[in-house]
Image 1: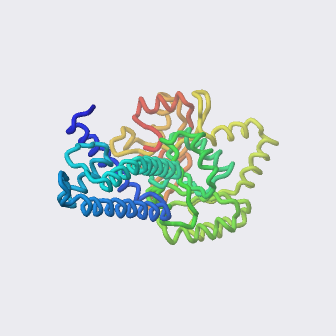
Image 2 (image 1 turned 30 degrees about the vertical axis):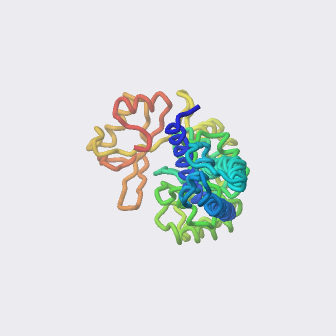
Image 3 (image 1 turned 30 degrees about the horizontal axis):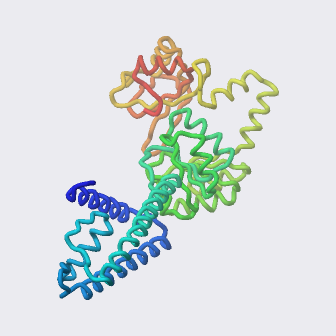
Amino acid sequence: MLHAKTKSEAATFLLFNFFALLNRGLHTVKKPDYRKLIYSLLSLLLFYGVIVFLLHAIETDVEGSKMTSWQDGLWYVVATITTVGYGDVIPVTYWGRALGFLVMLSSLGVYGFIIGQIANFMSTLKEQRELGLNGTGFKNHVVIIGWNDFGRAVISHLVAAGKDVAVITKDRTSIDIIRESYNSDQIYTLYTDYNNFDMLEKANIRHASIVFVNLNDDTEKLVYVINLKKHFSNLNYVVTLDNGNLKGTFQNAGVTYTICKNEISAKLMASYIFEPDVALFSEEILAYAHTDNEYDIKQIKITANNSLIGVYYDKAFFDLKKTCNVILIGMVKMQGAERRFIKNPEGSLKIEADDYLVMMMDGKGKTALKKQFGLKEND
C-alpha cells in the first residue's frame, strides 16, 4: 500500500490535472456540453454538500465520534472520494456509516465522470485541431478558399514548390481528404462557412501573399470577392474564370490576377496544332520542375546583400548562362506598390535590390544558382 503522504500527493496530482483540463475544456467545448458540464458539477457539489451536512448533524455529540464540525465531515468525504482513506475521521453511528457507504460507492461514479470528461476534452481538442480551429502561424502563404479538383491540382504544384498553403472549405469530408493527402507542416485546413470572415483570421489571411478564390461559379466569385475586399482590402486576389468577358469586371472589383481557363486551354490547343514541340515545352515550364531534367520558369528576388546588385542585366545574362546554365528572360522593377515587368530588356539596365529576376532553369541550374550566387526562389 502507498503511504498516506504518497497517496495524498497522487490524489492532489489527479485533481490538479483534472481541473487544468476542465479549465481548458470550458473554452473549447460546444455550448450545450458546457452547460451540461456545469450542471453536473453543481449537482455533485450539492450532493456531497448535503452528505457533509448530514454527517455533521448525525455524528456530532456522539460518543467516540471525531466529526465535531462540518470541516471534519468534509475532510472525511474528500479523503474517501480520492481513495486516500486516512482513517483519522470515520463515522461511528449506523446512519453515519450508511452515508459513508454511499460516499464510497458514488466515488466510482465520480471517477467515471472525470474520465468521461477528460476523454471528451481530448476528443474535442483533437477535432478542433483537425478542423483548423486552433489557427495557423503561416505567413507569406497562399490562402485557397474553396476545395475542388482544380484546387487539388493547384495545391500539388504549390506544395512541390515548397509553398505553405491554407485551405478553407465548408465541406467537412474534404478536410479528411486533404489531411490524408498532404503533410500538415505545409497544408493548413480550416472548416468554416466562407462568409464567417472572423473565422478567416484563423488562416492568418492578413499575412497571406495571395488569396485564391476557388468557388465554382463566376457570379458567386464576384459577389464573394466584393464582400471579402470589405474586410481584407490590402490583399492580392486571384480568380479563375469560365467567362473571359468578365475579366474587366473582376479587375474593377479589386482582383489582382484574373485567369480564364478556356483562353489558356485554347492557346495550348492551337499551339499543339501548329507547333507541338513548343506547346509541350510551354506546358512543362508552366508547372513546377519535379526532376533535374525538367525545366521551370522562376522569379528570384534580389536581396540587399546579393552579389548581382549593380551588375548590368546583359552581364548577368551571360554570367548566369555560363556558370549555372540558367537563362535570364526578364526582370521586374518595383515602382511603389506597382510591378513593371521588363521582358529581356535592352540597353544598360542595372540590377538593384528588391528587383526580381525572371529566369528559366532546370533542377541542376537551381542548385548551381544557389551555390554560385546565393540566389534561391522566393528570396
